Length: 482
Image 1: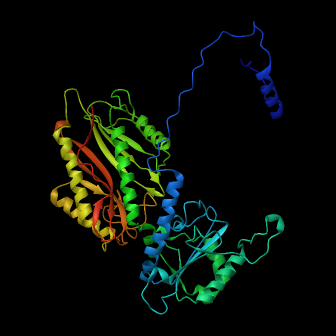
Image 2 (image 1 turned 180 degrees about the vertical axis):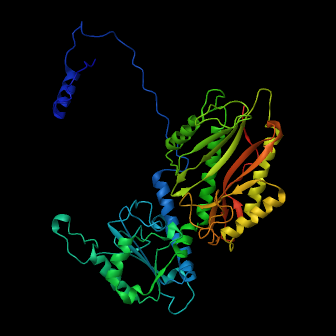
Image 3 (image 1 turned 45 degrees about the vertical axis):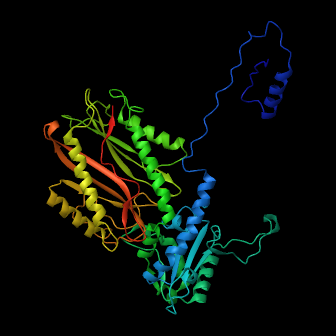
């Protein structure tokens, strides 16, 4: 039997170890020995849930996506936006928004300063564009698993560091960029600068200043705000990503249905904050992340103001806004539920009608958001159709993908229903995703004509062929809490 040993916090670590070992062999007198107790084995911990695989498996998948995405989308986008030499310069912890779209899963931040350069060597001759036309060069940082050609410094390094080749540093990087530009002699040098889109405004003022001073008037005169190029690269998704996104969406559905059930909710006891933190904990336990704080709200007959953290009661309409992040992809979902009153087996007809009005708005959005149209054009068409059908609601859908509020045209904002200048004027493209986000407000007869706001959000996919479909499906029946 082991005699417990009390060790002062001030005791050296080695002393603590010696005392602990000596306690294993020290004799124990009869009067010191406690009563014999049955030894109970510690319960086995359940294997961790990994609904999408291990970190290593996810990284391998992301690396495959990276190379294919750059080969698939970059050539056409360079030519489409009239840029033959694209410069993406950033420093550690001040990364360009395009960073996640051009780097591997093992790279968490830029390396010191990293300058990524994309060159279309076929543009000058006007030959057809292809992946073979594109050179991808990294001045600083790594090759990102072989998808970039990394150029190093010619400066020797002391043997104490292992004799490795030095990394590019300081003005040497700008001179390397200038040398590369002189070698390629591009007509248009694209830089990430925009007054409209955050995704295309990643070139910081310090980087622009340093680069301009190094290149001089000859080359800065060829600068062009790339704007649409990074915007569309960030937005573009592969078919393989679409398949994975469907699995993510299915997982979100399973979680929202579990949250809005008697497995989690006890009417009269459970608060909305309990569901919020249930979601956060559930997602964390599964090794996943969320890109925003989830929310849960209640609407109740005859009770317009329920306070900040109400208790869920029978007869309530529940609403959640939730998301998950996996492999640099994000979901955004809003679902609704009804807590049955005693004797009820389904939600009142008026609440079903309210949901149906929101479903009709979803149908309008799916038909009006299509390649070639701007977000503002799609918004106007949806609102016109809502007016014709007598539906009172608002449309505020947004792109989604590597960012929750993703790159591309907005289709309204909740407080800008007349259109969104600038950000709503971009054009929808194939191979991008949207969160169809909206709300319909409908008077419910069973609630004495009280208006009920049915807010919904479901992710959809625009394929490479331009066809539109739900990532999984949309909610056309309220979840029921019994």
